Image (tube, rainbow, N blue to C red):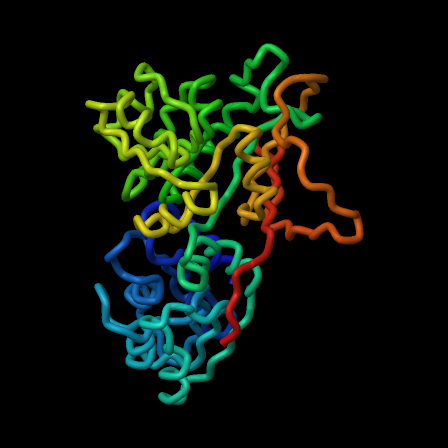
Length: 355
């Protein structure tokens, strides 16, 4: 299952809105073949593994998600496994999609042994945005990415933030963007850093993420990259309803979509209605703190650089106090080095549905 999960990750940025899926065929402890879902509309992981296997009869298929049971862009994987003579199927998670689910029942009806739950938590972490979109579609899955000093600053006292983290961390940030439907910043970060919020890494996303600015009452200077390139990549700015007309006038002639929202929750629901199922928020501290205080953050990608700043712009501001005994313990889903920096990924909760 660990290998299947590793394979599944290779589809990052290319398969959404489908899930990341990897599959391995084994018999008597020997690897026969493996595959992963590489492209939206392309062959599923099980089909690719079967296609590379000379004789799958009697084999065990280990797959990160329940094999699908419907005929969409490709035929049902459950039927393909039955036709191939596979003896056993082990999967990590049931498919929460009401259309695609049901593969386990079809396999059992055909006399195939089925086991589920192996690697369940790792698989849920890997496919968190997909699971969220099926189980809680009222708003997008919200991930917060912050690069800070050891003492929690995103910029020094003068406001300089480039670069706190190193090249490996910046490469990871671009890889991360490729897997989200939208990438967002607050107005302060948009003005101070003038980011392009494009993906310039090893993965070219199948669909470029929508760029979002949460601006409240503030306008965006027309000289910003986000404004000047709005014709090339969808860009949305959210403001309070009372500021909408003024901001629309200020951006007249620019292809920036101006949306009114009374608060962050309303803005996220608006994005969900537009088809945005996942959003990566890259700062700044005011926006991050507001989202956390409103309990609207589902995951944090925290990159810590091995340096101290002493003072500067904080990543997280003051929030509503919580007693230690009442503070929620988040789940660590990844921890590793990015060159000299350290990545910590934590989830508020894993979005799971029992089969």
